[in-house]
Length: 121
Image: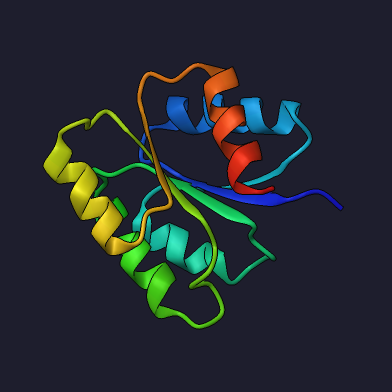
């Protein structure tokens, strides 16, 4: 059985691109439209990793990471931020919340897969 990755982004086109990239490499993908949806879907499968946007309605990426880290069942799941934000203070906020890594959009499929493979080793 392969790894299941939860991708959380309010942009349908970004979710589609991430999903196509990951599925093409053999991963199972669950998509969520915002942080709140992501939290709801966390308990629906055995999630190996979360890839989330930062800026989203209802619950942003930082809020999502805090919820992942606060839950004993999910607190050790790696969380990668995939966002247009590249400022040091945003990265620091992500790291403080518990982000495992940070990828700036637009991303190259091989860059995303490289990070995923490295983290899921």
